[in-house]
Length: 373
Image (cartoon, rainbow, N blue to C red; front, side, top):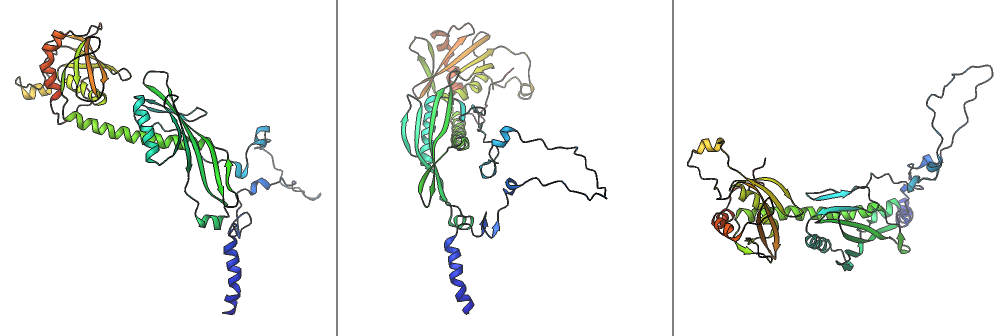
């Protein structure tokens, strides 16, 4: 009992002191990870004069350390982590790996991109120090990691309790219309030392990549959710009406946002005999071909001549373009021939009943694309 009482002060002193007494360079269990830095070449084995030893041949010589190698990082300064790569997540998101500052190319509406970037900062409770959409820059406040637990501090002898970073986001135009470069850069870093408060650190590219990837993951989740909502909306059908744009051209005005109408249009026109030839997502432009087909398929044979699944438009055969554009929270559609001539008001008025019924029809299964060649 007396021995135990006498040992208590020693145990208490060790517990209070911490400082890596159990594990570390000077701990009870010594860390040998960087012992190689102290390695020295030993002299060759010397044989007595009257003995002949094994004659070793240096068939695999180790080359001398080059000038760059001698000045490179070693020991604790050497980063053994794998390269930090920018995510290419989802449709229209491409990470650029060879850029000095991490960046990704995103195809989509600029206002929607800003909306999701701001929502990402809000949802992650990242403070914003300044925001200027005109110049395309956001400077965040400090983004802090969780505090390091007391056990690591006590056993490992760590003095750093937490880290924090400040980031700058940039949104810049890409090379093509509807493309944006999103750049994330850690501009400041600090570490909290229990003895000397917050101390400046050097931000690394890995910090920047990590923040950019967090946003790209959020953006991809938002894209997937929006796609699910558009599919559900497309199943319900779309109401359209005759409409004239500012140039006096006649078209259809869909009571539906641009993305939803864009997804639904190929399936709707596919039922009317249009075959999709191509599309330009940056211009929201579809290329269709309307032609008669004399070949009956499996479904024609199964349902017979009475099948009315496909309705034919009273429109001459040939190539057609369908241009979609936002009109507030609705969508305008202009139909034109391959030569660029927009269908006149009389023609579209004649076709309107069929087009209106096709767009308004509730579909149990949404076709993601029109028939293609």
